[in-house]
Image 1: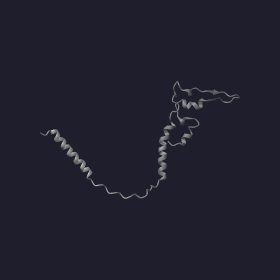
Image 2: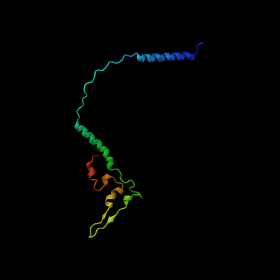
Image 3: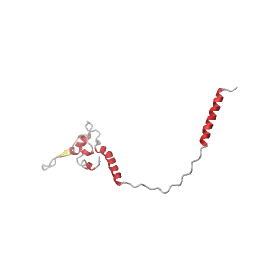
Image 4: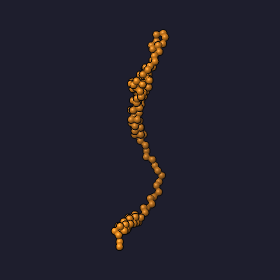
Length: 124
C-alpha cells in the first residue's frame, strides 16, 4: 500500500533534483582577457571648484545663523547680566552689553559685533 504522503515527497525530491541538476550543468564562462593599466580621467578644475563652493555654502550657511546662547531670551540667561565700568576723566563708560547683547537676544555668529563682518567672506 502506497501512501499519498510518500508519493508527494518523492515527486518533490525529484523536482528539486532536476532543478539543482540543471543549475550545475551550465557551461562555465570563458576567461576574460587580463586588463591593461588603469588610467584616470582628466579633472575639470572649474567644475570641481564650483561643486566645492556650492556644497560648502549649503554646509556653512546654517552655522552662521546658529543660536549660540541656548538660554537666550529666558530668565536663566547668564549673558543678560552686564557689567559697566565708568573710567575717570570723563571717558565714556565701557560695558559688556555690547558684546553679549547680540547673543543674549538669540543671535548667531553673524550677529556678533567683530566677527559678524568676517562671516560675509564665507559662502552661503
